[in-house]
Amino acid sequence: MAQALAWDIVRRATRGDASARRELVQATLDDLWRLAMRLTRREDDADEVVQETYARVFGAIDRLQPTGRFEGYLARIATNLVLERWRRDRPTAQLPESLTSAALEPWQTVADAEDDRRRLAAVWAAIHELEPQPRAAVLLFYAQNESCDAIGRILDAPSGTVKTWLHRSRNQVRERAEALLRSEPALDRAQTGETR
Amino acid sequence: MTAERQATDEDLREPLFDGLGDGAAMDPARRAALLERVVSARAAAMRRRPRILYLSGGVLAAAAAAVLAVLVLWPEDRVSIPPTEIFAYLLGPLTEMAAAGAITGAPPQENGLPTDAVVEAFWSDLEGPVAIGMDALEAPRALVSVEPTGPEASANHPVVRKEK
Image (cartoon, rainbow over all chains, first blue to last red; front, side, top):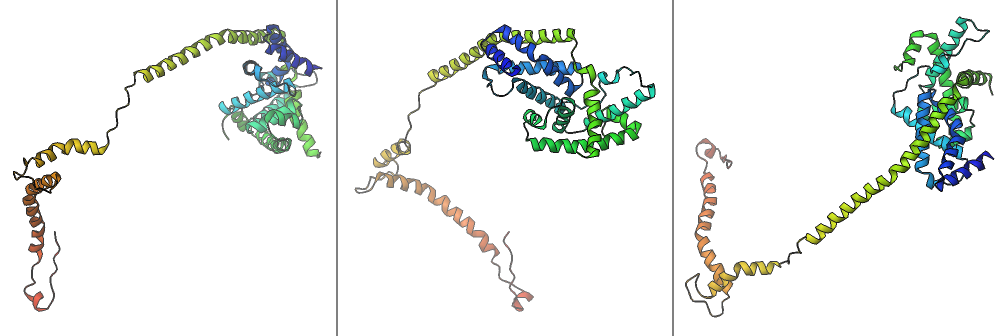
């Protein structure tokens, strides 16, 4: 139903219906921003990715073919934009504010919360040491709950390749995170983006 | 799924999915602002489009005008002159002069060609210098062909000297 609705809006938008364009953004904005946020973990970065994604979609909206899910098309563009950013910018593994500012749970002590923060930081830093495509696959799989097939469609890779990326990345992240947790200075260096 | 894989999955899923918590939900004010930015950016792009088209059209028209001007003002192709005509132009006066006996001073032979007289006139001027040059070339060979003398000659060891 949502799929039919989305393409119906796209068709109206291609005919120059301004309200349809607004409706198109309204219908897809939340999911798209959530995906961008899962990948970038920074609200400002997610905003930029979303804006750029819509700019690209609107730039080519006359040539869109109504095949598959429109949301999948958006996800593919947004993910590729994030990949471009990862390749272009120096990676920073600093823990996102949304993770560091988490409120203390009633059952947690301050020490527990600090342990959790360090564990998150180690995992996050280890993930940022992955290559862009495996990193995107890990984030889409674990953070966005996408299937291997869906990730393959988004990253334009066979499902088997996605599974390989996940398998290798899982081991790599685990080993690296454990190593970082054993050494506070190494964790600090990893979070500031310094090389090993 | 192995126990290790399951443990790793949980280790990853918790910080990446559960750990994000409400961080993946946009607050309404942010959403409204982003929506307006996206829609207004689209509107601005639509407004800019004709201007971009006009600019592109202007550039194309200028380029077309430049090409037309070059085609119109370009000089006509020069008439190609065959080499025989060039030689005839250069040698024509000489052959006419030779035919009239103006070069050698002798009257033209009855069955001789005018070009023969031209060649003869030039060769007569070149004959002397060419002969001197040939002599000069031969002279060093004469100088270096020295017969061996002294002990080498008696030992039947000819001295070979190189030309310099």
